[in-house]
Length: 255
Image (cartoon, rainbow, N blue to C red; front, side, top):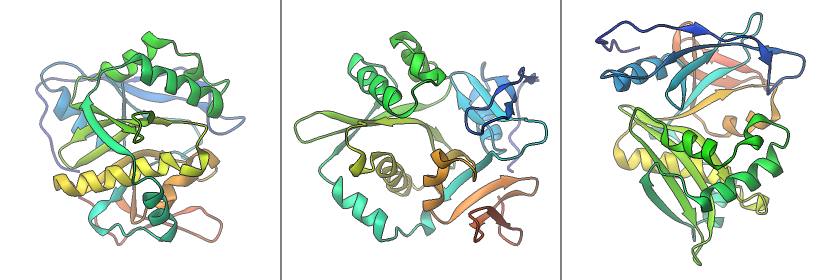
């Protein structure tokens, strides 16, 4: 990991255990720290390259006793070559227009977000979010963050992805889409768009957050190869064995 000097000390805290939202009968704990002050950007850069993620003005990483299922992953965009299924998804959504804007919440976005949560994550914490909670998620960012809306030719909002801009890539913070269009694979399409946008900007990575081999909700991330995983030895190439479990190539590069 690159050394990024910080201007002041930062404090890290461990959260109380809560039920894991991804794996049954497991407890979740996190290490968290606040992103604030004049070095919020540099702290976010350093922590993101060490496997942390951002939510609002907080950076966090899992710290679950006896469990290391959450694996930070990122796509090497300059080596990415979409297979036939991904090319089909790109063609199926080529009529959508992508509109980048500053991270500002709208009622239209929230209506789509609420529909998505009800259909895909009913019973989860995010399904209980009201508009002001949603606005906080979108707008409370101490770093450079933007929102991409994907609209149909008749200007209907079909999907959106909240994205952090980093020095070495784009980080997909959260995405949601029209749950009535499952055949469009809009979640996958937004990642394809981020890969193309990273290439356009000359950035080498798209950060996808955490991948969990045992979670069906996370399985889509393994489609985007070459994929790197962060572990004790830094970032290494991630491959899958016959059982779908991660295998890290220790001979591969790390920054």
